[in-house]
Length: 114
Length: 115
Image 1 (cartoon, rainbow over the protein chains, first blue to last red):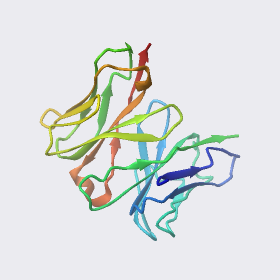
Image 2: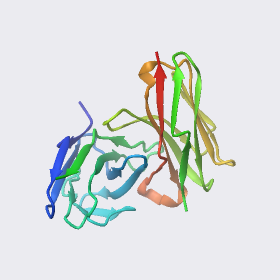
Image 3: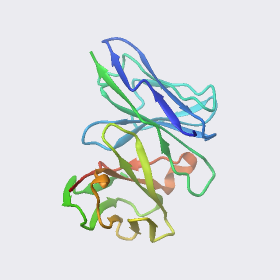
Image 4: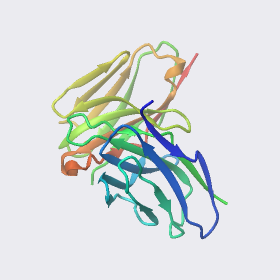
């Protein structure tokens, strides 16, 4: 089955701890994205990557870091500098250079602070 | 500032009713507009994508329209079913985003279809 997988489904973070959220896609998409969703708010872009070993900050990148060492993988690290990390995190991917460029989303990871 | 607004925030209708969800956006220089569906605690599923040159797109019981001049899009759902209950999100890609395919999302409309 082609698609996007995210793990874990739930993640608990202690104060001062860095945690990493996994995102993998087998759609052969060039671009990958990380969004944060808070209750009553729309999705906000954290980071995105159009090519391996390159990524750009989105609208709310502070307190987060990413890497793109492989085309299929785009992990997101929530660092201790992110003071309000509790949210639902969504990963997405898309082709580039096509007219449609629909973004396909993973099932999400819910991050909670202990 | 580029913003997307969805009204109402929540909507409850009886099964079988036709309904319209609204999306408005600032700045008419859009590249495309998408409608997504999100079930509770799940990811997003793309329903319809309308390019800036198009006026509407249809898929089954769903019809999305686009009026760039007024900065509005509507999602029409015919003969609603309880299975249509979900949050519907509108997202816009503006021309200035370049090759990034950056989307700006509305806050969504929570739809409940009562059996």
